[in-house]
Amino acid sequence: MSNNRLGALLEAGFTDRLGERDRKLLARRALLKACGEKPPFYLPTSWWYVVPGESYEGLFAALDLHDRVPVTFDEGRCVDELPSRPRAFPVFVTPEVNGWRLIFGNLDSAVGWDWDDMMGAVERLSARCGQAQMFFEDTAGGADIWVVAEEGRIRRRYARESSPEWEGEPLPWETRAVDDEGFNPEYDEAEPNEGTVSAMTACEYLSVHPDGIDAEAEISGHGWLALNVPNVGHQGLDDLAWT
Image (cartoon, rainbow, N blue to C red; front, top):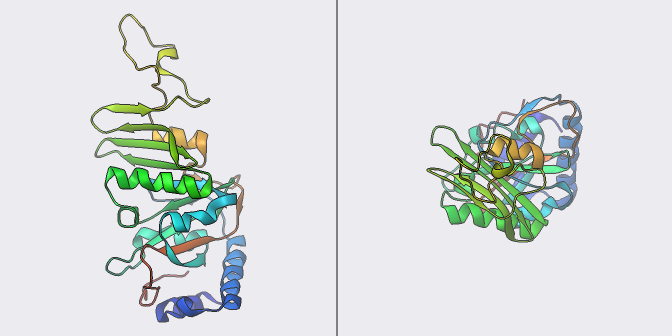
């Protein structure tokens, strides 16, 4: 199946009505095209979730995502630039990278900006997938967040806007602030569980750094585009650029 045919199927909404055999053909197409893609892949994101590749199927129910279509890395990674309709926004689930799947794109619409919405999403993901992570970095606004959840509960969290806060015990790879060689207990203050303070640092230890997935990464499977509302479908996304 050619790129043009896939674009036509999406534009006309035929992907919303495909049978099981045709869906398998679309998945096969994405897998074949993925073989020709060459890293590095740069994911333009400042907010993303991560789940294990072996249990990622649970993420669609956890985030209430619908009408998924198999795509390659290149077809999905600029998801924020893809057309949408009122209330209906695409979210990209990457192929498996070093054993993990990343979820990003239009999360402000799919999840919501409220703190409870953001934390609720990572908890639901971990309940469905066994474990989940969330990373958020806003250098302009000064926000920096990383979260690890397991079996529906947050195990470890760092969050900073005006002041830093930690929840849970430091993970084995973290260096406690009180154990840092530059820490002087006579002059410095730190909470006992203060540890790693950067989402971009934490993701390197926990799963996958999205800024430059290089040729050494183990990439398998295909990605998915899915919509954040049901019963809408992909019909009318006529500006998709399948190159």
